[in-house]
Length: 367
Image 1: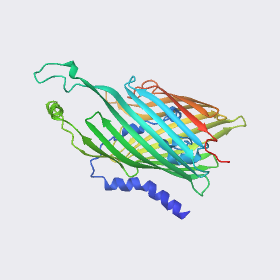
Image 2: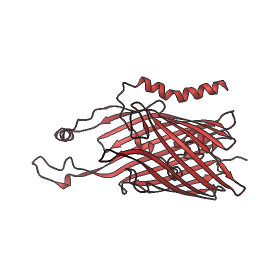
Image 3: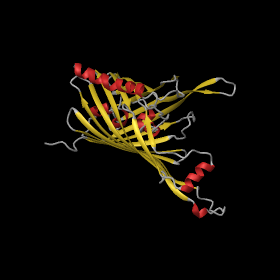
Image 4: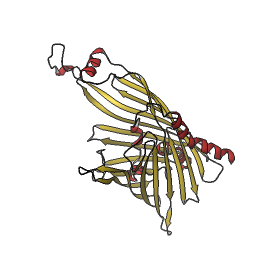
């Protein structure tokens, strides 16, 4: 018992210890931000408030400790969404497998990219003439591969999980990077009513090593346009801590369950435009509710991205991103739908998200 408490303390104090050591480090803000978009229409419909309630294949992303509560032998999740009128595409594949009653492994692959980008740096030839045949196309894409493990602890209702992630980012043949990071998750369920959870993203900081391959004409374009020529270097993604609480209410004996949840994201890369902010950390609350009927149908809603926007007369308005969603499960197949960014309250122009989950109870069980 004492060893487990010490382990939990070390895991969730580590981000703050690392932050103290890296105060002099030049870590860019919003690094690897594509990993903060979210996976699964269930979570997106609840305003990304699912760190405490996640118990399916998407737990490898939201909170690896939730993998320990996957009830199927094998869970498979798929999602595709498009941003900015289809210019950017986001794809997700997840797999979770229960090793035994106490432990589960998971894998997830994420891609966020823009394809067929025109490269016009060579549009004008050496004689100053415009030649459209010199235009080429390239792809800018971010990839992440997540390898997760979760296990239930001897304390009833408590589980721990960890995720090792490999990040690869590429911009045509001009630039590429490889990175590595670790996430850690904790979850405690009390009598299947209260659920408390914590998720430490990039707990050791995620390191991205960038390599640039710019030929002489490309470097000349950078100089003529007043831009600095990028150099090979190391990019750090600083730790982020998410605290979550969820409460399950069973309504009578009709199989109706109402589950509100609140998450609080604490970032450590300086001041952001969040509800609570300082020069060191910023706190971004989000909340959602899920209303389910016999694990067959679920209605969801939530809000996130709470921000103060300044008007021309120096007054400020509080805006937020509302979300709604619907889920249907039939014979092990779950179809989730989310309608986000209602009223165009945020900068990300997207609305419809659909994801699929397949659960196989007897896939690997032995007689």
